[in-house]
Length: 97
Image (cartoon, rainbow, N blue to C red; front, top):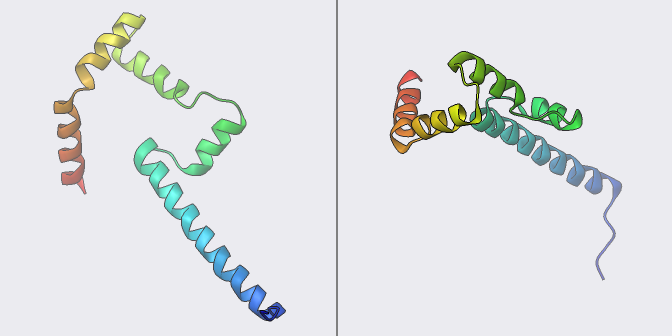
């Protein structure tokens, strides 16, 4: 039979686990910033407040580009969301670093 772990051993294991979790939280937050443009805390806050994550962004985009109807948005997406524009963005973003 295995010997029961001492309190010191249990504390060491819990500290190691805590450090791993902290590292994962940092990685998740960084991934959120890269992919969504805001940190994990902001995303959690939006979800807790039942906010639509893109509502403010969509409002700003509609205003800036003068998109008034759903057709305007569909046309905008058809033009802007292409493989060519994605590659252009990725290339320029990498050059800006």
